[in-house]
Length: 175
Ligand code: 2AM
Image 1 (cartoon, rainbow, N blue to C red):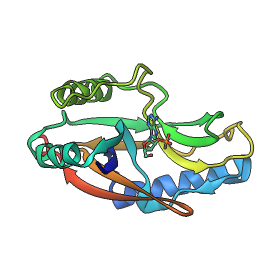
Image 2 (spheres, rainbow, N blue to C red; image 1 turned 90 degrees about the vertical axis):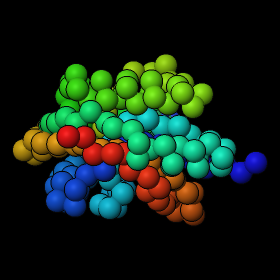
Image 3 (tube, rainbow, N blue to C red; image 1 turned 180 degrees about the vertical axis):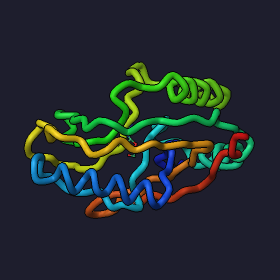
């Protein structure tokens, strides 16, 4: 059976994405690497990996019925995943509300037979890939406040030269 690579994410507004693109430009002289396209920037809540097409359809149909608890996260930190050669923006500390949103999402996903990975949740927005220097810049731009009230389900399609993301569903906005 065919499969689809899926993940749930917070998707920034265009103005927040533009600010994040500024963070990427500011870091690039220090770290090198390839800038992510502004319209693809996101914060992954749950990476599902390849799921079979039937489950993908079920999840897309169920997502509008799920409500993510609304909250706010401050992006105030540059971080590096040196093994993956990624420079990212994220919160220095994971806010309790975002952790709870992540945990409740995985509780809901258990109903579909999906299990959370054992690794802790590390909320981040990947800004640069294939970085050459694993030391982030000394100075960080002004923090960005991200208020969220929904998540999106995204299908990731591999293409030569990168991935294409397609938003296939959106959760019911909180409030
Ligand atoms: P990354 O930006 O840190 O690579 C689509 O690939 C999204 O899913 C990206 O946000 C990516 O995070 C994330 N992702 C890919 N593989 C993952 C994995 N094994 N565990 C957690 N997140 C993953």
